[in-house]
Image 1 (cartoon, one colour):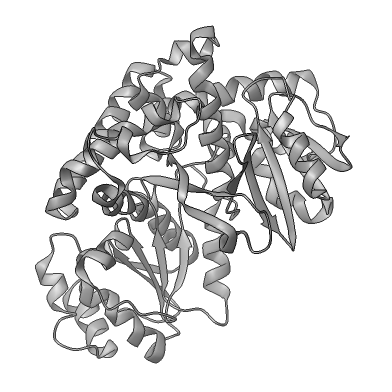
Image 2 (image 1 turned 90 degrees about the vertical axis):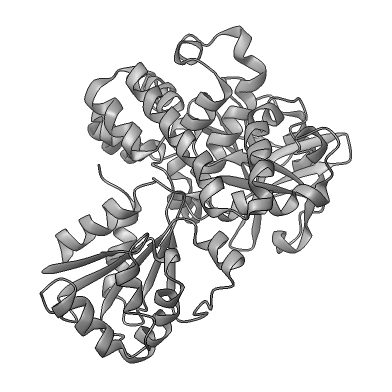
Length: 443
C-alpha cells in the first residue's frame, strides 16, 4: 500500500541539512512498514533495531555517547554486519522505550551527520513528559504520520486509475457523474473501514466487514491495554472514562468536550492530565475555539473551550457502534451523529496535509466548523455531510470578516460562488485531499 509520506522521507534523505529523523504517530498507523520499505527502496542496506523489551540493545546506549562505538556494537556485534554511512539506513523502532537512545541522537547529529537514522516512536510525546527524557531539542528532524487518508485508501482498494483521473480535474472543474458516484461509494467504505493499515489490508483482501470489525475491535482493545502499560497509574481509570466518552460527546448537538460528562462528579482539574496523555499519544485530536479570527490563530485560540475527535474514523464508527449497513444505506436514524462523524473525517484529512484548523464561535449565535491560516490568510470552512450547503454561520462569518476565499465541504460537486463577497469553493468530501496542493493557485 502506497503511503504519501514516502515522498517526504525521500526529501529528507537528500536534504543537505539532514538530521536524525523522528517519525511519530499513533500506534499501528504503519510507521514500521514505511521505515522498512523506505530502506528497501532507497538504500543498499537497512539496519533495524527494536527497543521495546530489549535490555541488551538498550545497554549499548547506557555506557556513553561515543557514536563510533555505538555503531560498531550495533553493526559488527549486534547484527554481524558493518553500518556504512551513505549506504545503510539505521532504524530505531519504538525508541521511546530507551531514553538513552533518544539522548544519543544529539551526538549523532553533531558527530555523524552523514549517517541516515530514522527513529519511530508511537508514545514518544507521552513518554517524554512522564519519564522526563532528555530530548535533543534542535538536533532532530520530525515527521508526523497518520492513519491512511481517503486517497491512500482509494488507491489501495483498486481506485488508482480514478485517483489519477480526478487530479486532472482539480477542484475547479465539475466532475462527471461516473466519477462522483464511484468516489462517493468509496468514501462510504472508508467511513466503515478507516485508515489503520492492517484493517485496510484485510478489507482489500476480503471485502468482508466481519473480519474488518474483528481487527478494529483488536486495535481498540490494544489501545485500552496501552493505558495500563504506559500511562501513569493514577490516570489509568480516567483514560478509560475519557476514551469511552468521546463518541457520546460527539453525538451531542453542541459537541464541545465537557469534563463533567465524562464521569459524574469529576472536574476538569482531575481529568486534564489524562486527556493530554491521549493527545500526546496521538489517539485523539483537540480542536480549539477562536472567537476573534486574527493572525496568528494559535495566539487567539481558547485552550479551555475545545472539541475532541478520534484519530481514525473507522475506529470511531466501530467504537460508537454504528453498523456498516447504516452508513451504506444512509439511514435517517444516523443523521445526528453523521454531522460530527463528517467533521472528524474533515479534520483528519486537513491535519494530514499539514493544515492546523480551529473552529470559530460567536457567542451563542453562530459556529463555524473550521478556520485555518495559510499565507497570511484566514480561511473559513463549513462541512456538511450531504448535498445541502446552506450554512447560516458561514455566511455570518463572511459578512463580518470578509475573507478572500472559503470552502464548503459536502457531497455536492465541484463549483464556486460568491457568499457576502467571499469566493467560496464547493469541494466534495472525497476531494479534500487535494486542498493543500491547490491553495496557492487559488489564492
